[in-house]
Image 1 (cartoon, rainbow, N blue to C red):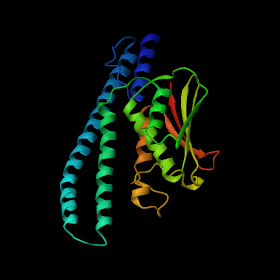
Image 2: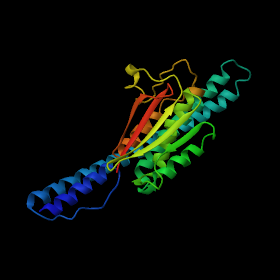
Image 3: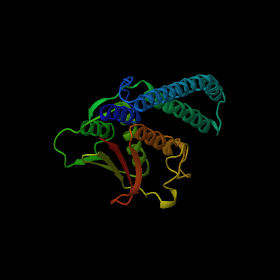
Length: 255
């Protein structure tokens, strides 16, 4: 009776991390079989809801792009106007916001999980920024394999680093591992985040520094998407103080 319980537990844990091991074979006592059937029904409902959300976002994106295109044309026909640059920026922000969340939602549905070297993934993300902006440090000599969605995780880590560089000049990435989890720590030398605002930074469309314009401050979805990705992998992101005086983001992933 223990073997089918372990299989059911493993399937639940994998599904919670974004994997699908296929249908569970109903074996064991009647109570275990009923639990397996209930899990399969729950899994089907969740997958259906996620697909519908993605389809809805795709439809919204399509519907919004048409009026945005018209707005862009109308802005260009304004001639010389003090408001022209601001309107251009607003349109670009809306397009970037729509595309960013649509890409995230699509990856969550279509991207398969696979075993990836976390060390190589982190270094690849760091290389997308200027070499003097991001430093990667780790005491781990060999590869660090973990099953995850690589493109989604690159987006999550890239969003965290981009946020740090938006408010500071440099970022430092450290990697630590235990038998239970892998932690990716991103420090920056920005102004830091006050304790009473740390619960708000992962909320959609929240920008703590309202004085920043959209070109430098983003649209407020980067950290929301990053944490959603971490949560769908069974992990999380927390915020603390960095030794360099800025913010520290700790992305933890279970092994």
